[in-house]
Amino acid sequence: MITLAAVGDVHLGEDAQGRLRPALEHLPSRADALLLAGDLTRHGTPDEARIVAHEFADLGIPVVAVLGNHDYHGEAVDEVTAILRGEGGIHVLEGDGVVLPVDGARLGIAGVKGFGGGFEGRCASAFGEPEMKAFVEHTVDIADSLRSALKELDADVRVALTHYSPVPDTLHGEPLEIYPFLGAYQLGEVVDEAGATLALHGHAHSGCEHGVTPGGVRVRNVAQPVIRSAYALYRIQDGGESA
Image (cartoon, rainbow, N blue to C red; front, top):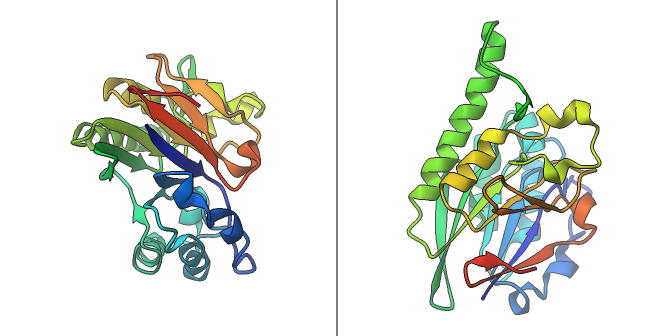
């Protein structure tokens, strides 16, 4: 059995040093890895990234993350990523993956930030103005990169980690008008096509935790305002997520 701890949308600012750390100290006895589903900072600044790095460094288990829209806001993504990797020892993914050994099994995690666009029947299309085409094509490109990352994993268990949601199920509670800005159906199609066991995301603060892709893959919204905890635990046993 593989046990994953996961949380997103912690939004740590420069005044947040040590806020989460006490709740993380016992993670090695509870989980095999910690997954962070984006929006780790408030404004995407290097100083905030250092707070995040120090908060999640040296926990005794691997930490794997994707960035979120807040982490992009300061237009310092390369520096933020370098700080998280260098000072925090965090595996930061964007269109790539990592394979972790867990009790003789190979846990593969593929990650992208994701993007918006909406869901089937209520989604944007690559038609009309160049700006609209660029918006949708960006989503398609990101979904394609997640597809490649998942398929390239040499692993027994595959987990998709994104910030934006791959399904509308976990958005229930959010205003319908903003669904197109919270996720995209292309991400869910990729999760099904690549044979993932579990998909984790954040971003939807007023959504709900549990969802499923059209192909039956379990999806969990781990935004901290949703799980209301420092992290949630998910157990993968016999090829399926059990908690």
